Image (cartoon, rainbow, N blue to C red; front, side, top):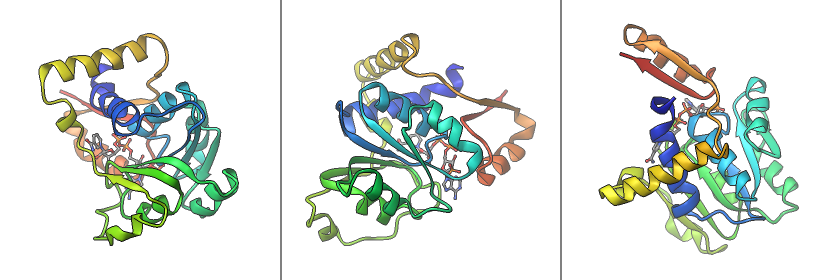
Length: 208
Ligand SMILES: NC(=O)c1ccc[n+]([C@@H]2O[C@H](COP(=O)([O-])OP(=O)(O)OC[C@H]3O[C@@H](n4cnc5c(N)ncnc54)[C@H](OP(=O)(O)O)[C@@H]3O)[C@@H](O)[C@H]2O)c1
């Protein structure tokens, strides 16, 4: 379980507590909400009192995202997630978007932000975000980060504190690791194919 959760959980802890501190009543958009980091982010943000909207790539992942605390789940391969977020928030937008999908979602994530909202682009599962004009942040006074979790855990003290926060959240049932698929090292190629196919929910680990 620790192999499946440590990096993903530390990433979620940095995102919800440091990059943007989620507060009760915040509207939060989490992309790939049934994925490894996405499901932990959804659980943590909803525990902090946020109204979490999740996106997922297929019908099979909707229930998983709901179990992780998403009040609304958008199937973003079939639905226009920007229009759905606008409808769900009554046009107000969200205070923060946690986006590790990258190329396919970046512009829609920006469009979904409320005034003074923050976009945390922490990954690029669909490909790198193309260069963009920074003045696009101006009209709504939005902010953007491209966080690297390791830069936030550089000293032993920071790592210990972040790990203590993570393990407390696990002990308190704030976080519930979902599906963990274990592949033998010899099946690594198959594990990669399954990740690429987007058919997997939760974490995929190799057993050595
Ligand atoms: N910045 C950092 O320090 C940091 C640290 C850890 C992880 N990460 C990044 O966080 C992301 C999530 O990590 P994870 O462990 O949670 O991975 P994961 O469980 O595999 O989640 C990735 C999800 O992205 C979605 N996705 C959208 N387009 C995709 C595409 N073209 N190909 C594959 N997946 C696609 C899929 O969900 P749907 O099918 O529902 O769309 C998939 O489940 C990764 O990009 C990873 O590199 C960043």
